[in-house]
Image 1 (cartoon, rainbow, N blue to C red):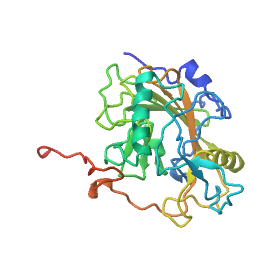
Image 2 (cartoon, rainbow, N blue to C red):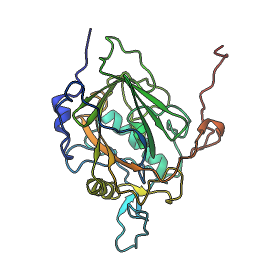
Image 3 (cartoon, rainbow, N blue to C red):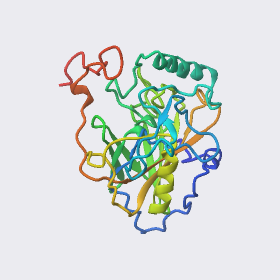
Length: 316
């Protein structure tokens, strides 16, 4: 049986975030309680690393409007952050191989011309990993032998098998084959075998991927002050979205532990090196609203109706 190593040495060395605990739990020890509903106040909430290779970011910028607590910022102290109305990916990022850079450049030129381009999100298709991390909210369920993750857009669900290897032959699927284990206070999830569809992408800028895509996620609880610093870092890149009374919005009064995801992405067919990023969640203010993209397939930010998946014949 072929077993994938959970994280390569090269990938693990990329993280310049605060170090995770690396020792496995002792037999019989209880895993950390990561369960519940979590949200991030930014669109799309991905935090580039303080140093080292990071994700493609948006070259289109506008002034930040709100601070991490939802308080208005003045023009004098508001940083220039990603303008989510224009998705102009930085195709000069050295992590991109020439062919991938051309794809990102094409999408950037379309966006600058005022044209929408299709993505898994606006076409109502499964978003896959790591694209799905751009969702605002996450429901994490810890269950015997498995973990279930539910995202706020279009009923997307991931299932992680615990303490199990990848099969020798991984059948490609929209969310890939995900296996997990605990290392001390950290949940580690390893994903391979992601299916490639007509709109598949790593991010909202259309960065492609190949069947070599390999994503390692690390989830742990961090203190409020560390989380606040992470939100400030995220707020220097991502626009603050949502009022505090929106269903997915984080609770502005919450001062307890936050959930931080750090992830590494490798794909030798697309990237020149592995790269890392993070996303930091806090407890939500209210129950989130249900969002069903496929119930309204019209446009979704492009010049054509969404290509909602349909069956040629019934499945029963």
